[in-house]
Structure formats: structure tokens, C-alpha cells
Image (cartoon, rainbow, N blue to C red; front, top):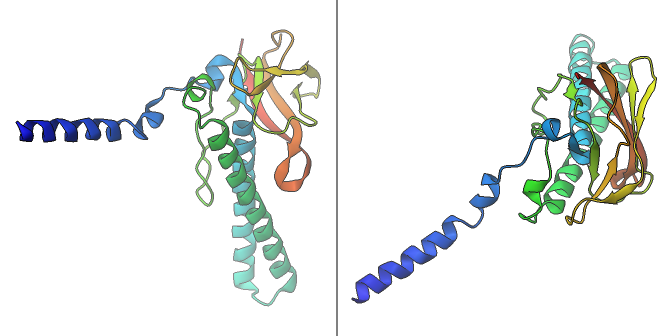
Amino acid sequence: MKTIKVLATLLFFVALLGCSDDDVDDIVIPDAEETGIFLEQDLHLLYLSRQDDLIAADIASVEEDLANDPNNQDLQAQLAELEERRNTNTAQITFLNGQIDEGLENIGIRPRVPRLPPVPPPPLPCSCEDRINFSQLIQVLLLGNSEGFAVTVFSENQEVLAEFGNLTDFEDTGLQVISIGDTIDFQGNVTIQITKFFEPINDNVTYSLGGSINL
């Protein structure tokens, strides 16, 4: 009888342990491109990952030149500057990943926030050259400071296709969202431009990503 009680107790604790952390990874989160609701930090991560690819290519080129001319001080200075830029870029990626983890740590909130597929951390190359599908674009979610937050969509000839309005609360998640007034009546390649206050530089930052709208 005691053996049965001991086994039952062990099974109980195994069940508790088995559904603690792993359940978070099993949560199904809707895809941002399908819902048209994009997490700003995902877009910023994608931008920085693409910048990392560009910087890495420049570093490889300068290192190749230095191999043929190792005492060239100009090339040495270029390499040092590029490496510093990449370190800064990597630190900003780390900050954004931490901001996302902290902002979505509530498993009740996480599945309600659409996400873009994750990008690999530096120094791995980012396989994300395809344009983002903004066909369903209606909202951009924001984690953190909302100071100076603005979102604009441009066509390839710099025509303003959409400017987003004021920030409002996103359901009861504690997140804020900026919304577009009407559906974008356009088909083709677009650029989404985002301005926000960015804590790592203690100032506003503006970045852009290419996308497409296929109605």
C-alpha cells in the first residue's frame, strides 16, 4: 500500500515538472503576415539582422584586402570601425530579444501577439532577404517606450500610402498598438518606415524595411 502511495506521489510531481517550462514553447502564436498585426520589435530585429549581414560582408572584404596589404593603416582603421559597428548592432539585437522575452513572458499574452519567424542571432547569417508580406497590414504593436512612435508606408516612388494614427491599448495585454485608418489600396513593393525612442542609444531611431502588398 505504501509503495502505491509513493508511486502516485512520484507520478504527480513528474506530471507537474513535465508541463512547467515546455508548455510555453508549445503555445501556437499566430503569424504576423497572416493577421496583419506586426510586433514592432520583430520588424526592428529583422532590420538589424540584415544590417549585420551587410557589415559582415564589408568586414570580409576588408580582411581580404588586409591579407594582401597587412600594414595598410587605412584598411586597419576601416576594419576596427566595422567591428565596432557590428558589436553595437549585436548589442541592440540582444536588447530587443530581451525586451520581447520580458514583454511576452505572460503565457496568457504570448499566444495573442502575432510574430514573424525568428531570425538567427549574429554571427549566423540571416536568411531573410524576401520582402515581408504587408497585404493584411492593419496594426503595429509596441513593447516599451512609446515616445516619438510613428509608422508610415511608402510606395517605391516615395508616395505616402498610409500613416498610422494614435497609440491605443491592445485588448487587455498591457501592450500598445498603432493602427491604420483604412486598408491600403495599392499593389506592389512598399517600404515601411518606423520611428521610435530606442533605449540603447537614448534617442529616437528611424529604420525602414522593404515589403510587398499583393491584393
